[in-house]
Image 1: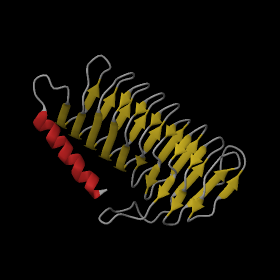
Image 2: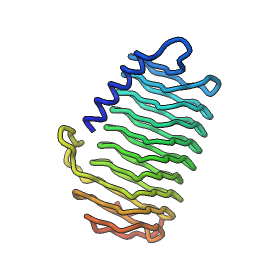
Image 3: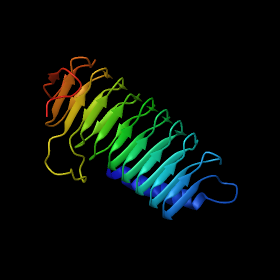
Length: 220
């Protein structure tokens, strides 16, 4: 993750150096960026600011260091990444690569799809009637897989990378809700609370004992 932070900063700097006449890349050092559906959009990057992407917009990568990213309904992007901020992919949106945050919640809404992986260190991961093709990875984040969601590539709750601090000593809570499907291994390298609906479909579990539950919600 420390490597991701360095790469994110270098990406913003390199995009800034490359912008010129005729270039559709957009770079802002301090300030938020709004991406509209009416214009041709390349890569978008900022250091301190949010990135808001309109419904039906198309763009390349969107990267920020300190700020949230919102991908509008039915919009498409190559990848989304922030260091400190949350990322939301609205209904029907598509990301052909990865969605990554270090400290921030990741949310996928109805019928959104990510071809790559979903990764953070600290922050919730919430999947609602959505598809992740490249698996989910976190260190200390809660995970909620809801509705008719499908996760290919499994779930990995990993030990801490050197140099990245967790959000306290709390135990992550992982909930696989009714109707959801997890294809691939669900692997835990440290203690978690795992709740699996009796109407969910999952692969093998390593590192935790699943608490089965009936109905819409797990026990508190």
